[in-house]
Length: 190
Image 1 (tube, rainbow, N blue to C red):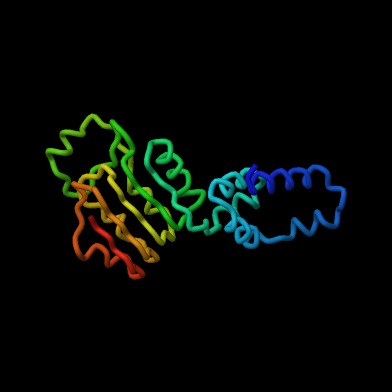
Image 2 (spheres, helix red, strand yellow):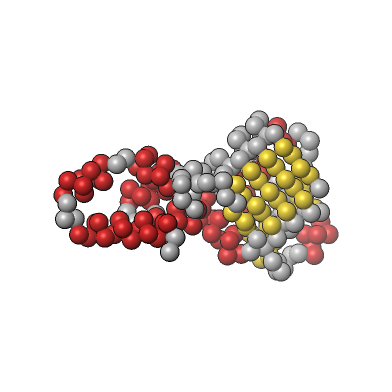
């Protein structure tokens, strides 16, 4: 299995056997901040698994800066996972937003194109603004996402270094909107 699964299995074995009382008390003394740093070396999937071990690890997972791996929201299952991750993994650093699939769209933004709003009225709607709950994204990629209008919440990430927007026909933005990205080094709009 993965490194995270092995780590969880060893922790559970240690927790149940507790033969060596000294090592047990030493392990319990490790601060949640140190556990969060260790979790930062694991893949995102394993960090999410570690949350189930104990309360200390759940809190550490919330503080963890996940490695710079891309989490792609390209279907409804991943959208629902992202909703959970805005709470459980708020320090996610890289995110890609794409089309959710046939019959699904993101909510209309400000000043949407009316003809497109009518055309997609029967689609299941999902709230894109929840990504504003991520505290520290460094990279955001919006590629082919079915969005209609202006979305100011997508332009308020002070640590964002790279923004890519492509194939988003009805996505509106204004030149002053990237001012919400004081750390922005790269802007790619197609």
